[in-house]
Image 1 (cartoon, rainbow, N blue to C red):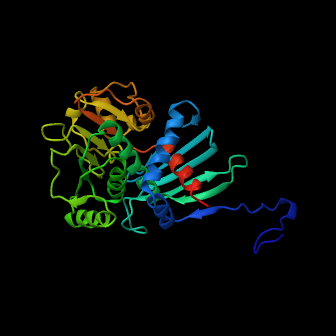
Image 2: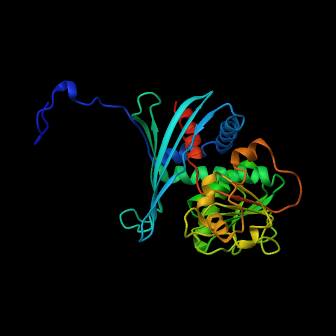
Length: 327
Protein backbone atom coordinates (compact mmCIF):
# COMPACT_ATOMS: atom_id res chain seq x y z
CA UNK A 1 0.00 0.00 0.00
CA UNK A 2 1.43 3.39 -1.00
CA UNK A 3 0.43 6.72 0.47
CA UNK A 4 0.91 9.91 -1.54
CA UNK A 5 4.52 10.98 -1.20
CA UNK A 6 5.49 7.99 0.92
CA UNK A 7 7.26 4.68 0.40
CA UNK A 8 5.35 1.45 -0.32
CA UNK A 9 4.33 -0.35 2.87
CA UNK A 10 3.43 -4.05 2.60
CA UNK A 11 -0.22 -4.75 3.37
CA UNK A 12 0.84 -7.13 6.14
CA UNK A 13 2.48 -4.21 7.96
CA UNK A 14 -0.37 -1.73 7.67
CA UNK A 15 -1.95 -0.88 11.06
CA UNK A 16 -5.47 -2.11 11.67
CA UNK A 17 -8.13 0.53 12.34
CA UNK A 18 -9.23 0.61 16.00
CA UNK A 19 -12.75 1.76 16.72
CA UNK A 20 -12.86 4.68 19.14
CA UNK A 21 -16.07 6.14 20.55
CA UNK A 22 -15.93 9.95 20.72
CA UNK A 23 -17.80 11.78 23.50
CA UNK A 24 -18.18 15.52 23.01
CA UNK A 25 -18.78 18.11 25.71
CA UNK A 26 -22.55 18.27 25.07
CA UNK A 27 -23.02 14.52 25.41
CA UNK A 28 -20.85 14.34 28.55
CA UNK A 29 -22.88 17.12 30.16
CA UNK A 30 -26.18 15.53 29.21
CA UNK A 31 -25.24 12.11 30.57
CA UNK A 32 -23.86 13.51 33.83
CA UNK A 33 -26.82 15.79 34.52
CA UNK A 34 -29.79 13.80 33.18
CA UNK A 35 -30.05 12.05 36.55
CA UNK A 36 -27.77 13.70 39.14
CA UNK A 37 -29.00 11.41 41.93
CA UNK A 38 -28.02 8.34 39.90
CA UNK A 39 -24.52 9.71 39.26
CA UNK A 40 -24.09 10.42 42.98
CA UNK A 41 -25.32 6.96 43.95
CA UNK A 42 -22.97 5.37 41.42
CA UNK A 43 -20.04 7.38 42.80
CA UNK A 44 -20.80 6.26 46.36
CA UNK A 45 -21.09 2.61 45.32
CA UNK A 46 -17.98 2.66 43.12
CA UNK A 47 -15.82 4.38 45.73
CA UNK A 48 -17.37 2.26 48.49
CA UNK A 49 -16.18 -0.89 46.75
CA UNK A 50 -12.67 0.57 46.69
CA UNK A 51 -12.81 1.43 50.37
CA UNK A 52 -14.01 -2.10 51.20
CA UNK A 53 -10.90 -3.55 49.51
CA UNK A 54 -12.98 -5.39 46.93
CA UNK A 55 -11.04 -3.60 44.21
CA UNK A 56 -7.40 -3.11 43.28
CA UNK A 57 -6.27 0.39 42.37
CA UNK A 58 -3.18 1.57 40.53
CA UNK A 59 -3.04 5.31 41.13
CA UNK A 60 0.36 6.88 40.50
CA UNK A 61 0.87 10.51 41.53
CA UNK A 62 -0.33 12.86 38.82
CA UNK A 63 2.42 14.57 36.86
CA UNK A 64 2.09 18.33 36.48
CA UNK A 65 4.19 20.19 33.90
CA UNK A 66 4.12 23.93 34.60
CA UNK A 67 4.81 26.63 32.03
CA UNK A 68 6.93 29.57 33.24
CA UNK A 69 4.50 31.99 31.55
CA UNK A 70 1.52 30.43 33.34
CA UNK A 71 -0.65 27.38 32.90
CA UNK A 72 0.22 23.71 32.96
CA UNK A 73 -0.72 20.30 31.64
CA UNK A 74 -1.28 17.19 33.72
CA UNK A 75 -1.00 13.48 33.12
CA UNK A 76 -3.40 11.49 35.34
CA UNK A 77 -3.49 7.68 34.93
CA UNK A 78 -5.59 5.20 36.90
CA UNK A 79 -6.33 1.46 36.68
CA UNK A 80 -9.17 -0.14 38.65
CA UNK A 81 -9.62 -3.92 38.84
CA UNK A 82 -12.64 -5.25 40.69
CA UNK A 83 -16.13 -6.75 40.56
CA UNK A 84 -17.08 -4.48 37.67
CA UNK A 85 -14.09 -5.58 35.58
CA UNK A 86 -10.97 -3.70 34.58
CA UNK A 87 -11.03 -0.02 33.66
CA UNK A 88 -7.89 1.73 32.48
CA UNK A 89 -8.02 5.51 32.09
CA UNK A 90 -5.59 8.36 31.58
CA UNK A 91 -6.47 12.02 31.45
CA UNK A 92 -4.33 14.57 29.65
CA UNK A 93 -5.65 17.89 30.84
CA UNK A 94 -4.34 21.41 30.48
CA UNK A 95 -4.78 24.70 32.34
CA UNK A 96 -5.28 27.26 29.58
CA UNK A 97 -4.40 30.70 30.90
CA UNK A 98 -3.60 32.19 27.48
CA UNK A 99 -7.07 31.58 26.03
CA UNK A 100 -6.40 32.87 22.52
CA UNK A 101 -7.23 29.84 20.37
CA UNK A 102 -9.66 28.48 22.97
CA UNK A 103 -11.10 31.62 24.60
CA UNK A 104 -13.10 31.50 27.82
CA UNK A 105 -12.03 27.96 28.68
CA UNK A 106 -9.39 27.37 31.34
CA UNK A 107 -9.67 23.55 31.30
CA UNK A 108 -8.75 21.79 28.06
CA UNK A 109 -7.92 18.18 27.31
CA UNK A 110 -9.33 14.66 27.19
CA UNK A 111 -9.95 11.58 29.28
CA UNK A 112 -8.97 8.41 27.43
CA UNK A 113 -10.21 4.90 28.14
CA UNK A 114 -7.89 2.10 27.02
CA UNK A 115 -9.07 -1.33 25.97
CA UNK A 116 -8.34 -3.52 28.99
CA UNK A 117 -6.56 -6.22 26.98
CA UNK A 118 -5.18 -4.58 23.82
CA UNK A 119 -4.61 -1.03 25.11
CA UNK A 120 -5.87 0.91 22.13
CA UNK A 121 -7.94 3.99 22.94
CA UNK A 122 -11.54 2.78 22.91
CA UNK A 123 -13.22 5.96 24.21
CA UNK A 124 -12.25 9.63 24.15
CA UNK A 125 -14.12 11.98 26.48
CA UNK A 126 -13.88 15.74 26.11
CA UNK A 127 -12.33 16.77 29.39
CA UNK A 128 -13.60 20.22 30.35
CA UNK A 129 -17.12 19.58 31.63
CA UNK A 130 -16.23 16.06 32.78
CA UNK A 131 -13.51 17.46 35.04
CA UNK A 132 -15.84 20.13 36.41
CA UNK A 133 -18.68 17.67 37.01
CA UNK A 134 -16.57 15.10 38.83
CA UNK A 135 -15.26 17.91 41.03
CA UNK A 136 -18.85 18.85 41.78
CA UNK A 137 -19.67 15.28 42.80
CA UNK A 138 -16.57 15.20 45.02
CA UNK A 139 -17.79 18.35 46.78
CA UNK A 140 -21.29 16.91 47.19
CA UNK A 141 -19.95 13.73 48.81
CA UNK A 142 -17.72 15.75 51.13
CA UNK A 143 -20.68 17.90 52.16
CA UNK A 144 -22.93 14.89 52.73
CA UNK A 145 -20.43 13.06 54.92
CA UNK A 146 -18.97 16.04 56.79
CA UNK A 147 -22.11 18.14 57.28
CA UNK A 148 -25.11 15.85 56.92
CA UNK A 149 -27.36 18.37 58.71
CA UNK A 150 -26.48 21.23 56.36
CA UNK A 151 -29.48 23.03 54.91
CA UNK A 152 -27.96 26.29 53.70
CA UNK A 153 -24.65 26.47 51.85
CA UNK A 154 -22.69 29.02 49.86
CA UNK A 155 -20.88 28.30 46.63
CA UNK A 156 -18.12 30.82 46.00
CA UNK A 157 -17.31 30.88 42.32
CA UNK A 158 -20.01 30.75 39.64
CA UNK A 159 -17.98 29.11 36.89
CA UNK A 160 -18.35 25.58 35.56
CA UNK A 161 -17.16 23.93 38.78
CA UNK A 162 -19.46 26.11 40.88
CA UNK A 163 -22.41 25.19 38.66
CA UNK A 164 -21.88 21.44 39.13
CA UNK A 165 -21.12 21.83 42.84
CA UNK A 166 -24.50 23.47 43.41
CA UNK A 167 -26.30 20.93 41.22
CA UNK A 168 -24.93 17.82 42.91
CA UNK A 169 -25.04 19.22 46.45
CA UNK A 170 -28.76 19.86 45.96
CA UNK A 171 -29.19 16.14 45.20
CA UNK A 172 -26.90 14.96 47.99
CA UNK A 173 -28.79 16.69 50.83
CA UNK A 174 -32.25 18.30 51.21
CA UNK A 175 -30.84 21.81 51.03
CA UNK A 176 -33.22 24.71 51.53
CA UNK A 177 -30.96 27.37 50.03
CA UNK A 178 -27.78 27.65 47.99
CA UNK A 179 -26.21 31.10 47.71
CA UNK A 180 -23.91 31.63 44.74
CA UNK A 181 -21.28 34.35 45.03
CA UNK A 182 -18.89 35.51 42.33
CA UNK A 183 -16.66 38.52 41.76
CA UNK A 184 -18.71 39.05 38.59
CA UNK A 185 -22.31 39.46 39.86
CA UNK A 186 -23.78 38.88 36.40
CA UNK A 187 -22.19 35.45 36.22
CA UNK A 188 -23.55 34.52 39.66
CA UNK A 189 -27.02 35.62 38.59
CA UNK A 190 -26.87 33.65 35.33
CA UNK A 191 -25.64 30.48 37.04
CA UNK A 192 -28.22 30.74 39.83
CA UNK A 193 -30.99 31.38 37.32
CA UNK A 194 -30.03 28.37 35.21
CA UNK A 195 -29.97 26.07 38.23
CA UNK A 196 -33.20 27.47 39.68
CA UNK A 197 -34.92 26.64 36.39
CA UNK A 198 -34.03 22.98 37.10
CA UNK A 199 -35.50 23.09 40.60
CA UNK A 200 -32.24 23.70 42.47
CA UNK A 201 -32.84 26.18 45.34
CA UNK A 202 -30.25 28.69 44.15
CA UNK A 203 -29.98 32.44 44.39
CA UNK A 204 -27.22 34.89 43.65
CA UNK A 205 -25.74 36.70 46.65
CA UNK A 206 -23.40 39.66 46.95
CA UNK A 207 -21.25 38.19 49.73
CA UNK A 208 -20.74 34.89 51.52
CA UNK A 209 -22.60 34.71 54.83
CA UNK A 210 -20.73 33.16 57.77
CA UNK A 211 -24.05 31.75 58.96
CA UNK A 212 -24.06 29.27 56.08
CA UNK A 213 -23.52 25.67 57.13
CA UNK A 214 -20.69 25.33 54.61
CA UNK A 215 -18.74 27.28 52.03
CA UNK A 216 -17.80 25.43 48.86
CA UNK A 217 -14.89 27.21 47.21
CA UNK A 218 -14.58 26.98 43.43
CA UNK A 219 -12.35 29.90 42.51
CA UNK A 220 -9.10 30.64 40.71
CA UNK A 221 -7.87 32.77 43.63
CA UNK A 222 -4.17 33.27 44.25
CA UNK A 223 -4.76 34.76 47.71
CA UNK A 224 -6.33 33.07 50.76
CA UNK A 225 -9.77 34.50 51.55
CA UNK A 226 -11.70 31.86 53.52
CA UNK A 227 -11.26 32.03 57.31
CA UNK A 228 -12.76 29.75 59.97
CA UNK A 229 -15.44 31.03 62.38
CA UNK A 230 -16.42 33.64 63.34
CA UNK A 231 -15.62 35.04 59.89
CA UNK A 232 -16.37 31.83 58.00
CA UNK A 233 -18.36 28.59 58.32
CA UNK A 234 -17.76 25.41 60.33
CA UNK A 235 -17.06 23.48 57.11
CA UNK A 236 -15.07 24.61 54.09
CA UNK A 237 -14.67 22.51 50.95
CA UNK A 238 -11.78 23.86 48.87
CA UNK A 239 -11.78 22.89 45.19
CA UNK A 240 -9.91 25.67 43.40
CA UNK A 241 -6.40 25.66 44.87
CA UNK A 242 -5.06 22.92 42.61
CA UNK A 243 -1.78 24.57 41.56
CA UNK A 244 1.21 25.90 43.49
CA UNK A 245 0.21 29.54 42.95
CA UNK A 246 -3.46 29.14 43.91
CA UNK A 247 -4.82 29.64 47.43
CA UNK A 248 -8.28 29.79 49.02
CA UNK A 249 -7.83 28.97 52.73
CA UNK A 250 -6.42 31.22 55.46
CA UNK A 251 -3.66 29.67 57.58
CA UNK A 252 -5.94 29.76 60.65
CA UNK A 253 -7.66 26.59 59.38
CA UNK A 254 -4.44 24.58 59.65
CA UNK A 255 -4.37 23.94 63.38
CA UNK A 256 -8.08 24.24 64.14
CA UNK A 257 -9.92 21.94 61.74
CA UNK A 258 -10.16 18.25 61.05
CA UNK A 259 -8.73 17.74 57.57
CA UNK A 260 -9.72 15.38 54.74
CA UNK A 261 -8.47 15.29 51.13
CA UNK A 262 -9.59 13.72 47.87
CA UNK A 263 -6.19 12.01 47.53
CA UNK A 264 -2.64 12.30 48.79
CA UNK A 265 -1.87 14.47 45.73
CA UNK A 266 -3.62 17.34 47.52
CA UNK A 267 -0.60 17.78 49.78
CA UNK A 268 1.52 18.81 46.80
CA UNK A 269 -0.47 21.85 45.70
CA UNK A 270 -2.08 25.07 46.84
CA UNK A 271 -2.81 25.71 50.50
CA UNK A 272 -1.73 22.32 51.85
CA UNK A 273 1.62 22.60 50.09
CA UNK A 274 2.09 26.04 51.65
CA UNK A 275 1.10 24.79 55.11
CA UNK A 276 3.56 21.91 54.89
CA UNK A 277 6.39 24.27 53.97
CA UNK A 278 5.52 26.48 56.94
CA UNK A 279 5.31 23.48 59.27
CA UNK A 280 1.63 24.14 60.00
CA UNK A 281 0.62 20.56 59.18
CA UNK A 282 2.48 17.27 59.26
CA UNK A 283 3.74 15.49 56.15
CA UNK A 284 1.63 12.49 57.13
CA UNK A 285 -1.25 12.23 54.63
CA UNK A 286 -4.65 13.09 56.14
CA UNK A 287 -7.60 10.71 55.59
CA UNK A 288 -8.83 10.65 52.01
CA UNK A 289 -12.26 10.46 50.38
CA UNK A 290 -12.35 6.65 50.48
CA UNK A 291 -11.69 6.74 54.21
CA UNK A 292 -14.40 9.35 54.69
CA UNK A 293 -16.97 7.25 52.84
CA UNK A 294 -15.99 4.10 54.71
CA UNK A 295 -16.07 5.59 58.21
CA UNK A 296 -17.96 8.78 58.95
CA UNK A 297 -16.09 11.28 61.15
CA UNK A 298 -16.97 11.42 64.84
CA UNK A 299 -19.97 13.54 65.75
CA UNK A 300 -19.39 16.95 67.23
CA UNK A 301 -19.21 20.60 66.39
CA UNK A 302 -15.52 20.68 65.52
CA UNK A 303 -14.38 22.54 62.44
CA UNK A 304 -13.99 20.46 59.31
CA UNK A 305 -12.07 21.01 56.12
CA UNK A 306 -12.00 19.08 52.86
CA UNK A 307 -9.47 19.85 50.14
CA UNK A 308 -9.66 18.55 46.58
CA UNK A 309 -7.04 19.23 43.92
CA UNK A 310 -8.27 16.64 41.42
CA UNK A 311 -7.82 12.89 41.43
CA UNK A 312 -7.52 10.41 38.55
CA UNK A 313 -9.58 7.87 40.51
CA UNK A 314 -12.59 10.20 40.26
CA UNK A 315 -12.04 10.52 36.52
CA UNK A 316 -11.99 6.73 36.32
CA UNK A 317 -15.21 6.51 38.32
CA UNK A 318 -16.89 9.06 36.04
CA UNK A 319 -15.78 7.18 32.94
CA UNK A 320 -17.27 4.02 34.45
CA UNK A 321 -20.59 5.80 34.98
CA UNK A 322 -20.65 7.20 31.45
CA UNK A 323 -19.85 3.79 29.96
CA UNK A 324 -22.64 2.26 32.03
CA UNK A 325 -25.12 4.74 30.51
CA UNK A 326 -23.96 4.11 26.93
CA UNK A 327 -26.75 1.84 25.77
